[in-house]
Length: 435
Ligand code: AMO
Image 1 (cartoon, rainbow, N blue to C red):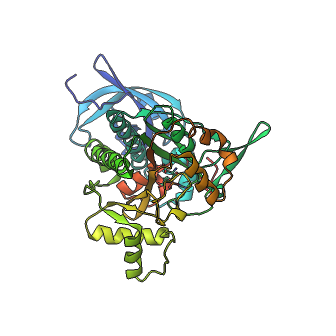
Image 2 (cartoon, rainbow, N blue to C red; image 1 turned 45 degrees about the vertical axis):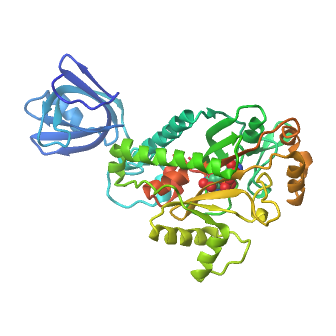
């Protein structure tokens, strides 16, 4: 064909006529001529219907369509300097697949500001907006980029159970479920399983899967269900080996979004900057000093909290760093599976922060059985409830470490969105279980 056609599955060409399939976005009736805009996943195309030149029945049908109805229109393609795409379609026939009721619960093109809750209540409609859909095109690309890089680094993709008998990240955020006659939970993280895999010889694994947290905190960064990108690798010499992998994956994915996601970034109006690498490494104590210097009331051993993280982010951004590590957290602050730095109050753990928000945490694990049990007990946990996990440490476990990255937090900070829910198709939080 001589004319340009969008790379789309909803357009087909047959003997010089083209058929477009999509949603009726808008109808402009100018009396002698009508314009109908049809939208599909890739964009919008204009149907130009001159009253005198087309079948009167067809004209009537076309101009009385309700907005958001789903149709197929066949016609002749003409180049046009009046449309963005540079072409328009003169209709020959119309097939109506589904008539949309009116009024619509939510406008797709209306410029009026709608409450986010209203948007989420009618999410299927909200997702028809190109700028909303683009976020999910980019999320899909992000997961693809992660998988590309992880495969290149020889990581196996794995799937671990999401129905579990024991939590790994503290009892407070566990969702109990009914599991036949047993008590079970939704997995907070694949932590115990990815570590168990280290004892099998699968020495580099990763997973991109849902994680569940009964988070009571109603914030723009916490949800009850998020996608966690987890990695675990054996034979590490220190946590630095883990950090090096993450840094490589982050640079690859962020650059990939910037170069391969341009089409969607333009729709959102977002610009992605590639963080300066290597990422600076700050110690917990350094961060504490920074915060005290800013007048924040915080004492040794305390978590920085949202406000503390934000302040550190501001300072780091003035230094030109969007992405930075925070290491040497007090061992009391970190989970039982993290290795202690012997003879100190610290641990071999890290957080990765992106523009003032923690997007990842991880570290070197305690792979020595006796010490692991001691650490569990010190944290008030009962080793018996971790039986199958602990068993894998008793018959040969290599040194290892890993991380968990919140995929939505990564994306939201990359795109400059202000609520994690913007990056979740159907978010779940304290107040939201539907749609
Ligand atoms: P952590 O609990 O820090 O570590 O979680 C890892 C990352 O997951 C994301 N995240 C969340 N995102 C949205 N809503 C939530 N409620 C939420 N909770 C966590 C964050 C966070 O940095 N097992 C360890 C990781 C490891 O050591 O391998 C863990 O889960 O981006």
